[in-house]
Length: 111
Length: 110
Image (cartoon, rainbow over all chains, first blue to last red; front, side, top):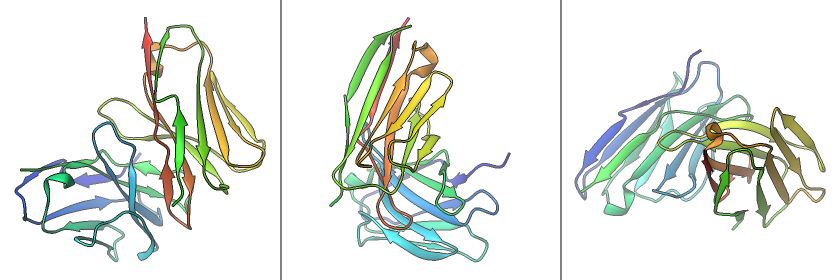
């Protein structure tokens, strides 16, 4: 069965650089979520989209933005990266807000 | 803002012992989900509870939603080494916004 695809799986950036993370949800899923998980921490909700429209926002810094495209894939854009942005970024998709299927995550390291 | 706390933070058990993690929300939840995350892996959905007082079972796992819909528990009977991981509850806050609990990290000693 198709799963959530995230790319890249690993990303190393320097401070003040920008990064773009991509997420391809499970086909026919209408909701996409982005989470940030620091080491030993719980996933922190960043933002969600329902049918390509932004639905809810969480603790997403102003330096970050996200969008969902007509083909349902989503991108998380991160600018002016800081050391504290180093984390695992998960994308998840669901059908109408039911169980969330998580992707394998993108490990971002900011040096 | 809404907070979802879990206790204990860590639990070490001998294989075959039972394990319980408790989830408490600062606000009433319309539903609650449970996830398991293995070390180095991603969260995997276990179950969703919706009704007040609801109890659901999955083999050795029993999930309960409190009457006031502010707390939940996950009980594992006779733990196995395959149960190792971090168990998270997640409560909905908004339309499509889930607040994850702080997690309980379970280690099972063979």
